[in-house]
Image (cartoon, rainbow, N blue to C red; front, side, top):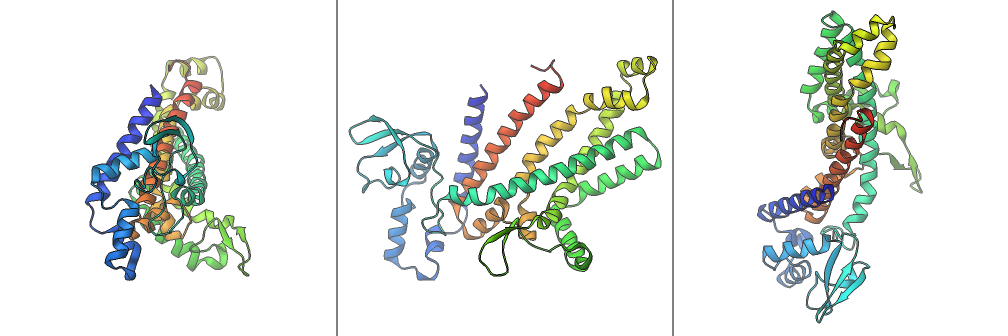
Length: 350
């Protein structure tokens, strides 16, 4: 059942994003040729990429490329999108004019970078986005849980009110504005003290331009900025959940048995307060993968978000659709993983 849900969800995402870009202004063929366009070249490009075909036919060709089991034409000259020379495939059934084959999903090639596969572009950038998202969610989890626990233990005091004020402020701060402020303050004004850069990626060329080197300090500012809003959500959810748990009967019973407050909180309350927090974490982690666009672009982080912005500017549709598919698939897999975490924390969940 979960497998079918994955298929239908991805099918919906592909359908919406594909037809959305068909109605947007701009001609990909003209953008590919830039200033060198002429009628003959435009005709060749449109025939090669199928721009001259009806939209529905282009859509079916794209689904054929994405499908694990797909059709390939025996006559490669007539049907470009059914050609077997795009990727390796295992032949399953041979028909009169085509083959049914087993293959990996094919995301096609970039319109702007001739001969470069979308899968190659994503594999070069998506790991950086994952590193950024994981770092941000770790920072948010540690700080958010700490603030939430402190806020619950000191409910309705100055400390609680101050933490809630910070959380509200963090939730209301847009990521692009936080990025600009943090980059300016810590990467420019205080650069002599922080030794941080305003922009930079995880790997950068050395001073001689010979090889890429790991620059971990470039991860600090974007991960902190990306984690600000999750910190606020986790803090508030942990506070509310822990306050509710502290009033449960089994907690009162644990106190009556003479257990210390520290043991009751650590052994009974925190674990049973984590379910709503984990729900928030799963949603926010998936959101960080998709929502890192502005943060990556402002900090010059070589991730999938920055690649999406550049592709939107160039109307590089295959890269955009491929990126959205990867992010959507990641979102689905994260939710499935969270379901298993629920079962570990609460065996009553089936």
